[in-house]
Image 1 (cartoon, rainbow, N blue to C red):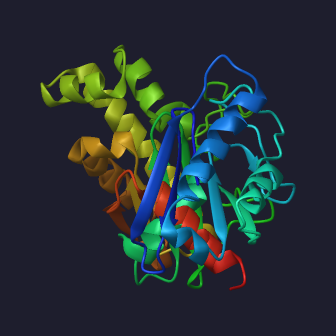
Image 2 (cartoon, rainbow, N blue to C red):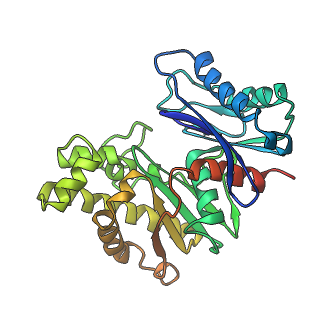
Length: 297
């Protein structure tokens, strides 16, 4: 399951990451918690009609955050109807109603993306990796010593809320100068004085100085956060996906240039930066991969 503010998607995923069957509903807006959960249940019901349903062995749920994997709850910023919503228990109940009393696990969407990129994407073959989603917000996840490392609550690797500017602007999380306040698509657009990140990218490609500066500052913030993470846990690759990453060298060129300043210690100077290899299916593939790693067969 891949739960976000725009869509709620589900798929039956084979062991090799192939999506066998998929279902999708638009995330209800302006409704209550029950209606949003109703969309999740509709996705489960549709998947349960497939012949492959009989082979389901585990369930992974990747959700927009904040999440609390220990309690099985979510409070997504972009799903206002859900606050401390027990999505893990409710999804398990929906599975049981369709004859699939299987173990399930909840992770943040950044952790799900990390699981997907490590299994099939740009981080494949790396034992220590940070994978990031740079979009409306900035999230991420970690692979340490070859295994997904979600942390106790499922939020480990949430690089978007590392502070890289001690006197920076206030962040909704309560801190100041977080990576997200500088490098998210929303922030880039605001700093460029344009309506969205796509418009900012177009202006930057046309040579607009303010837009170019916004991408340079975003790259610098990402470089500082990635270097701090690499120094702390010795990752050897940082994979970056999400809508902002589609700007290509507008983001990656300043990021790599600034990384040379921030990643100065010997053991982080060879840190690789790579664009994510998987597209819109990363959330579903990653939720399944997380379930495979974190749950017993």
